[in-house]
Length: 219
Image 1 (cartoon, rainbow, N blue to C red):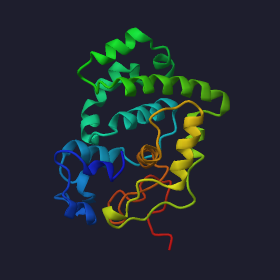
Image 2 (image 1 turned 180 degrees about the horizontal axis):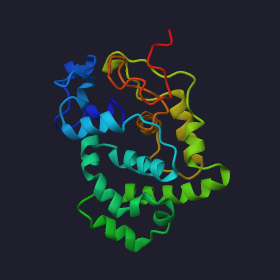
Image 3 (image 1 turned 135 degrees about the horizontal axis):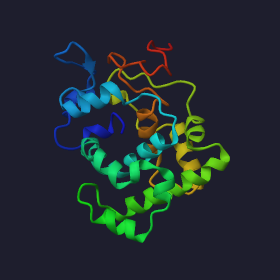
Image 4 (image 1 turned 90 degrees about the vertical axis):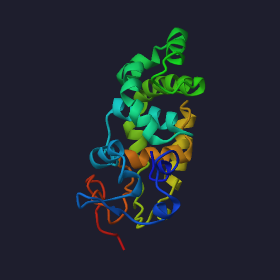
């Protein structure tokens, strides 16, 4: 989920808000408009979004959820996240890689999650690709190898990019290895979510908290 992805859907910031900087919230902290109101999104923003993720299961979960988010609001996916974890065996790549047609039918009948056959098939294909990738360093090594030399330094929502040369390269690399629903925009959102890039607004209280990037502008 990227800062720009969150603009769509019910309860998201207006175009005026989205173009501005961080919002000063009642607790004295500045957050982007999308994280300023909804308690679930605020908790996600404050504690998880943008923090480094390296473990295989964690990366696989986020990869799958980013794919399911395509065309939907991130709030929808976040609210369904516990159900997704239950339906997809805790996002164990080995377990999901063994899913067969009966599992696909089970998932298609599970109204707790997003029932989209193409996305379900992609999640299973991606699990198999993750397992195969272990012979070549693993998913974490591949994704983090596309970390850029510099991270964006947005002061307003309009300055937050939706893709980058690195996300384009990552998407192409993953597709060559059999991954699906991994376009450049989706991969940039993944890179934001796991700290590969830092697109926290410069005046947000979360800027630089991942430990991967400095808080101050690089000049």
